[in-house]
Image (tube, rainbow, N blue to C red; front, side, top):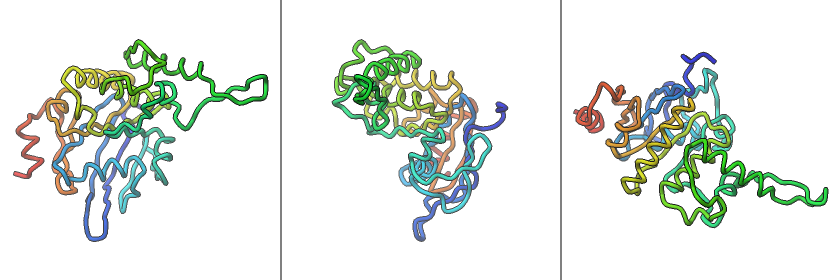
Length: 248
């Protein structure tokens, strides 16, 4: 794949709900090793955009391309299989299970006991957890502890680790730093930087401009369902972004 081919391209995407145009002719691109922030006020279309990208809503018009090839998704599972993983604010983790069990939730590896009895391969799960967390440069003391014991930043790492293990090329992160303290926010910023270094693409949705400026390469601003503007982070400032968000 040549590096000029975007990992993800959204072309002229529209999504209508009856007469309401939640998204109207929106385009954006995510390249390998790039973090693109999606910003906008409530009702700007951010949620509709990520739900179209992650297979929840079929677009009314427009197309989605992965590595230059047009794709359609029949479900979020379909988007996942094509390399797009969405990490929502609630993280969708099973609190009572370990990191390994969360990584394999619904896709557990089995082995045969006495050559015929299928049992969970806990060793394989623990090993995958250790390897994946090390890849993210994230070290927890106890891999066998339930994730309910972990802090917000650590739980975020488990959700990212799951996506990485299943080879997500594009991670959509919905408000990953909301409800976290400052040290934990820094941890998540470090995790996103490690995803970039691995050549993955990240779509970063946040209300926090500080975080957006800390991790993103580019910012796409939505306003009432249209793309109000797109800027390289290096060439813009908070004030300009706010103006694009509110129109004026």
